[in-house]
Length: 295
Image (cartoon, rainbow, N blue to C red; front, side, top):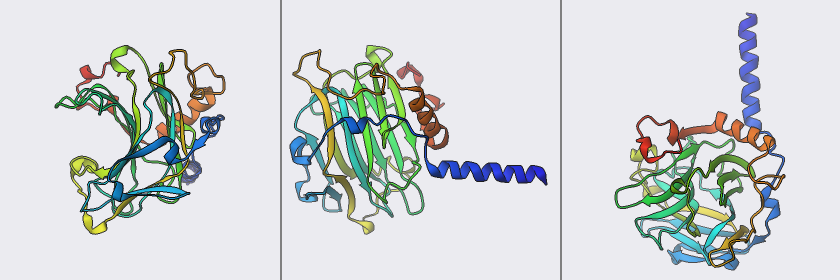
């Protein structure tokens, strides 16, 4: 009886702990970056008739008559901090991707670099999957080498706006959710780290072939339109492609200012990975890891 009571208390405490979210990271890089409106930093890239902007939000949507909508930064960057407040659509969104990412695909088609925050659509009562990904000179032409790490978040991303950000500097890439680091991708060598300038993008589109349960569940346009919302308050703090190599404009990854994460940030990141990570490419036995030597 005592053993059963102990187990009950353990699981009760553990579930409450998970519901409360991760421990404080102790440092909030988004607060170090001035916000700017959509028109100050971006322009429509495609689907202008499926994009609406007002003082509070940018709304983009997808329906059966369109390929969705996307936007692109006015400048390309070779390092920086890039963040967006996003709110996702509830209900049936299987097959649909809502994203915020860096890419140079238009400059290097078939051989581009990319750093992704992608929300993979879902079905009612199942959580969204947040996919982080990194491509290095090897995406396209049938030779796609992704570095996916996926999470189910500790909150419902359809209920309110939350902040999602990428910090990309010459030595590491860190993904943040509400200033909590969830993944760190360090530079181990030139071949496994993106170094060419990239633009910042956001988009919503139909990725039925792979987005939900590896493509088993497709987009269903009876539930259209599929909508993604971005607060009209973006964070762009980076060094553009034409600036001096000595340029340093992004906030530090930690309070120390010396690069890397603090112990408190690492504890928060490990909590997220322990409780909410659902896939890691390095741990996938189906993958050919000769293509991902950093594993």
